[in-house]
Image (cartoon, rainbow, N blue to C red; front, side):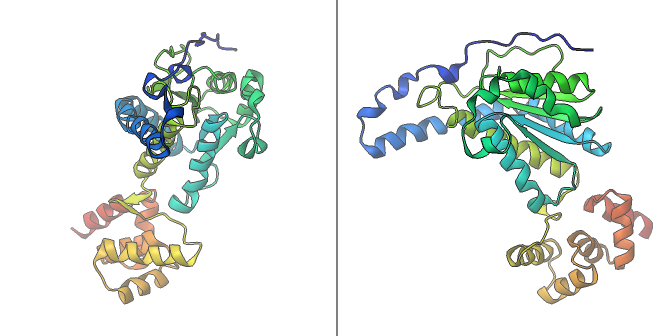
Length: 307
């Protein structure tokens, strides 16, 4: 059944002129930069105000991944490019499995390099992009204006397919459609250059995406304390980082940690649980399997069995 669409066509502050920067074109270069920087400094506070709603989105994403489903990003223009970047960086940082994150960008791959502005107006294309969405998935849409047809069409279609949905908007006038689970509004106000949402709105969305995906990874056990324990060591730099992380977590020597990593076939989590608990490699691996890869939970299992 098609879900009725509720209109969210409203005026967006990101399109308005900013009185604080009205004479930016008359200033010396360093003062131009100071004005832009002053506007940029407003962004973190705007993101902070949206954290309660973003937290709900994180929990929905964790629920989806924990039940074997996936997370989808949907965006157009700057929003889509930032979403693509965020998803791409999760694999080397957290070694996310295939199928955990997918990105749907209006205009496809070509729009990552060139502006395909008319693509964002195609609501039907957004709906079609959700063909791979399954019941129980989570779909996060991003749009500075809160009204991009491609994104709204995708979110409505995802809801029709049984996914939970959230929308990130930089427009405080965005109303929440009845079919949307979470609305995350980050009010960044007018841009330094009117309508240039690659500036404050884009910065805010970058912060939102980084916070969202990192929090999801923490909740999914891809970290131990504040250490990246699920990174994929695909080059010399990352192999060195793996060894440093193990030394930081255990306080042991480079030789001891290197030996443990060799015995664990390079698996940082197994080596870490082995060294922190004193359990043999095989038991450490089994505890991690039982705890779905959570180092802290695996240590708790081993400690409980040792009592």
